[in-house]
Length: 102
Length: 130
Length: 134
Image (cartoon, rainbow over all chains, first blue to last red; front, top):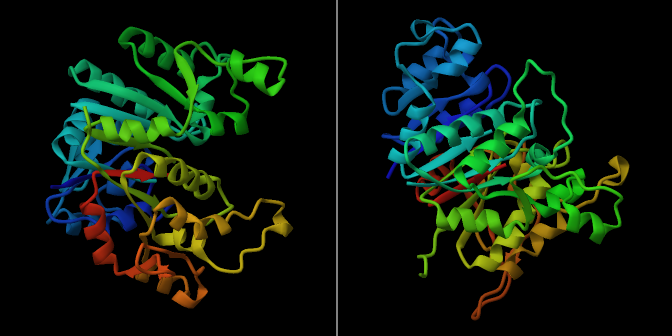
């Protein structure tokens, strides 16, 4: 039974994304929301770590948070799928538990 | 699915309350049930009716009050956190000898047990914080 | 209708006193004890400092609530998981932590702190029904 991990802070500001990725299990999902989305930008120094995690876990970013920060889905690392709030709800329903990495 | 939602931050300073609101709205639009929205830590500050945000900005408290009214949501403000931060209803103001109360429509003040109960009743508990 | 008991995990990742999260999460644990769910606490990242021994808060004018962790056994909270890598990264060892014990019907003073690896912590998290983060 898998977990939806949500991360809301940028990995350049706080270690929550790093800590989250250190605790994910295969089959889990990681959803970047709010400022965390900046960490998934292609070419950014965190993108490699996300791509590595993306081999075992599904990576997502919240579309409205990207747009608010001047990012487009095509700016995201290839492993990241963009979802809207409805998609966020679907992910929370699909996985057995949601864990917020604040 | 039954969702419980926890809001750990107040309006405006952090995005948590906005994200929680959008999540709640999306869940309800999809036909899910929101069994409770529990406001803890600075999240209790979402429940003051005294905010006067700029006209061209969203009104976070009003968003919650209106969503609460439309869907008959149980929006609970933790009493201990509320006491620390000065969010009072009429009863609490009388009890504590304060000369005013400030709780917004649709919110009720209750104990931390309501958070645990939300975790027990809901299929999924989703936390929004900083 | 009776609900099956759920496994609740309280996740603590922040040092005490720089913010209120450590104190207010502990308050949830204490109140939550009355609901007879299966409760455990996780301390990782800077959260390990919440269990540091020798906390003296006089200089900052804040209440020292570290003694409350020692009372958790009285509330039937017996599993405090502390992440080894988080301790090591911060130069801490188990000697730096509070002594927290609980009693059972058969035994007294059983240590409540369980040092676990990051991988074990991930497994513990993956086995919970409800995860509360502060």
